[in-house]
Length: 311
Ligand SMILES: [Zn+2]
Image (cartoon, rainbow, N blue to C red):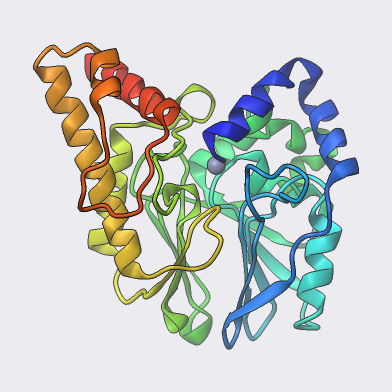
């Protein structure tokens, strides 16, 4: 999720997880139509985070394998039945597997509305976040309490996990902390595609959830660099909220953009520049055409970098 969403979420924190979830369930519109990206790979866009009347959460990918459907991310609470209907419009096969790219409520929101026979898969850090006794609504641990604990990921991994084989193969990679402490890059080698979750906000400053889900504004860079240097043979990348898939080169440019931001921030900090002065003076380097650095995001990430560098 992006920072603007967090602001909205934080305003309603007092209402508690369940009230927030219930509110969203009532007001959530149907998810968008399913779009074919490759023969057996589809995308359901969650829409624009800033348009609360039509937004249904993070982007989902639907991968149809020989034995069933794999769904990556489950959008907001209330999206479950609508997601199932869109998937049924392209295949009769049942959903066998759900992969959550991370814990946030707009990526795991409808896990508990799907058939419990599904195998839920995520990084071990994401499972730990989902299984917390208490958390802010953004981390979504309230969705996995009591009987709903059965929707927690049963299959987890530390660095890398391969599911299935041949043209059905899916590779999950974790390269360290970033947006949260449990982000997965989900790769479909046979169709050369990847879901990068919220590690890839296309051409904007990332939202780094340091406060509630174990993210790191410093390690965010190393994690992106790990992905770009390790993952091969991908030419289509979907981000958590990108309106359309983009190219591997767009992803690569994003990793350069964030590295450049981190380097400038750390240089300034080393020179003793106050964080506010750095934030005021920061502009996106000209080679990153079309990139946007909202002042609030620059401030949040710079402050996180200053704090993390102190340790
Ligand atoms: Zn997120």
